[in-house]
Structure formats: structure tokens, C-alpha cells
Length: 208
Image (cartoon, rainbow, N blue to C red):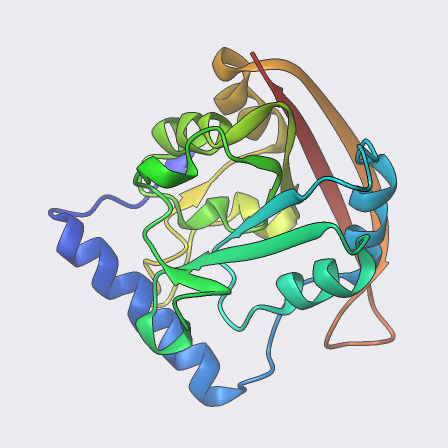
């Protein structure tokens, strides 16, 4: 595993917000979320009782593409929210301004499903893994997406992509706080380059 170190939490926050602002300014619709990934996760998610509300949480959503996909594809009894560290992208309702490295009391044990492709932005990935697993209900699932870029630290002044690891190292972070871990490989279309394919690995963790 590789990690950019920050002297203070404020320095970490500035790096994350600076990168997000740059990406959104350059292209407000830029994202790396795959509709095929969302379909796969929903297919693997236990259906539950259609008459009871089910809750989903996506961490590090930026412009909220994954929230829109989950909301459009999941059954109507699902309610989705996202966390985002850059205030201008947060409405306080669907997208909550929150540092996902930190626990949030009202989210403890609340969610049936958590998804993120943003663990490479974790300042302390081991602690963050535990926080996310603690946010699950006993029967919940935490889905972490990994690609080859998740094993590369940010370069050329970008310190916001501050954690890098292999699939095995990602799984090792969750082993102490998971009852089971399964991995699935998917080849999907690149969201911005239609002629290219992206190899993605989905890591599904269930709580202790």
C-alpha cells in the first residue's frame, strides 16, 4: 500500500476540495461511474420486503451520478443519499456535506447497502473501512469498486488521490471488520471513451 501523508486534516481537506473543484470546473458532467456496475450490485443485493423502506449510501459522490443511477434502477422502496466533501455540490438532503473518513452518529447501523469508488481518497483507509462497515445494518452489504487506477497515487501535484493499493490490499483493510468478503470482476465500457473497456473489481463485504 502507498499513502500520501498530510501534516494536518485541514491540509487533507484542501487537497480534496481543490481536486473536486478542478474536475467539476473542467467538466461538470465528468464521472467514472458505470451503469453496468450499478446493475450488477443491485442484482446481487438481497431483495428484502418490498413494503419496508431500505436505505442506501454512496460515499464521495461529487456530482451524484451513482445516486441517480441507483435511484432510477432500484425498486421504489429504496432511499438513497450520498456524502461529498465539497460543499458547493451538496444540497444537504440528497447529498450531505461530510468527510467520509469521520463517523456520523446518525448513520451508525442505518444502511442496507453502501457503495463507493472513492476509497483512494481516504486519509486513513483502515479506519475508514471500519467506519463504513459500522454504518451497515446487520444484513447489509458494503461494495467497494477497484480499478487499476486505484493502485496509483495522484501525481503532478495531485495529492487528493492519497491512497493506493492492490485488490488484495483493499480486501485486507476490510478483513478485521467483515464476516465475509467476495470479489467480482467486470469488464465495462469506459464512461468517457466509448471504444475503450475498463476492468473493474467489486469487493462485497458483509458486517460481523
